Length: 152
Image 1 (cartoon, helix red, strand yellow):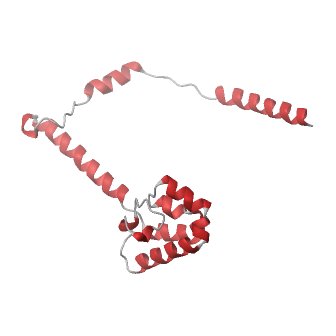
Image 2: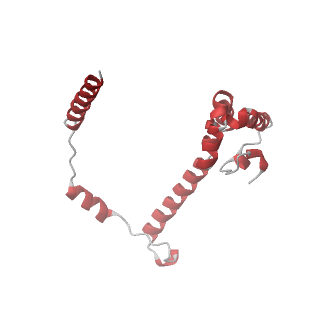
Image 3: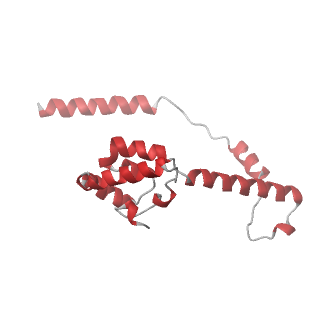
């Protein structure tokens, strides 16, 4: 029986490897890459803005504005999503991973099933209060502690 299982798994892996390897081919157009790189503007943040041409200065301002707006969007987490995750997956700490907790804290949360459910329940209550009061959860984001309400 072992031999049949081993042979069938080896056959399956061989068939999958052959079929996946032949499904797509990649092509790199070196000329297009070189053209794109040559059209770019070299940016040096150590150079004062007054020493830069106006067109380059406008490009730099647009890039810095885009970076600022992207970071502010990525930094804010939705309290409703965190509350829903805590409601259904609280014991696994998925809401903590969503809010950006440290990896080892999340692993500890999973291994203890949210502190035998007590810590997960308190997290749920804290998120409910934050959601009802429209406070936001920024003070709980990126918190490396096991007890998120304990402060940073």
